[in-house]
Image 1: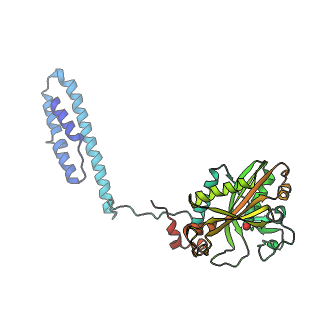
Image 2: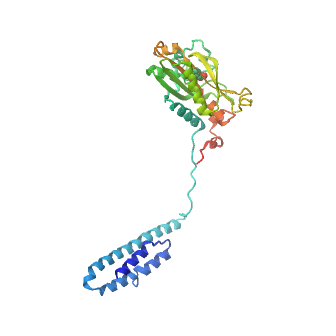
Image 3: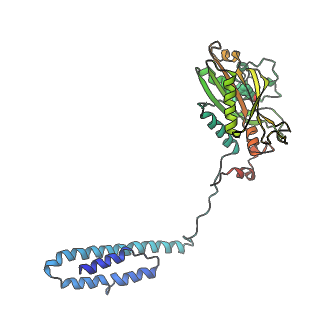
Length: 339
Ligand code: PHE
């Protein structure tokens, strides 16, 4: 009898039922009146008393196993049938969810931040609604400077002291006011300028500001950092060029160009010059350090600021800056990362 019990146990070990018919076959074979389980119980009556205890226990175990197997598949099959009856086809593949993606400006901003993070810069942010002190005065803009004019700046109220920041350099000032050197930070953010919207410029755009203040910082440090950035961002072969320029808050000041992908042959993008301008930079003017409570005799530093849209347009070969603000999904879909 033990052999028979073990054989049945082995049989039902691999048993699977997906239809009512299969399940009914199982019931008839093992659990019905004339099924094998009852057969074994009949046989049990004639077992020698000595063996009754052992075989009885095994037989009860088998009974439990058979009913449990039956119940389990019955529940599965019933559930499936209920799904089908409700009109839900449970074998259908799921609906494809449409996956969102980051805005290309965020993608480029994160990439810029990551590159600078790798060389020890941390990220800081500041307010978009600012005062004259942080956007202009502390940055050495003379009172009559044209950037302070209504032509260039958006004022929030009639009070000319409250305005939308025209550059992220205002965050430099906030950082310097409350941080003791050494300072090594980048400051991404949205800026506003009262400009006519066209394919090349917008009244809202994004910048990333960089600031490094320590002892004995030189122009060579600035150049190396920017070279590292350009090569990480645009590729190993990228060349940089610094042209003298002017900003009230840096001295000396420069504008940085990167070599165009046309390899200097000249194309429409670089207007046949072989170079593309991507940022302003320079050594922080000692007046600015003093204005922000940093000892200009002890410390020096560099600063730079770049437009994120400008870099995105170069990277993605976009012809019109307005596309970054219209949120047309046909444009944005191109930036869904491949899965
Ligand atoms: N704030 C300048 C601009 O908006 C860029 C800049 C930043 C230049 C830091 C020099 C140093 O054009």
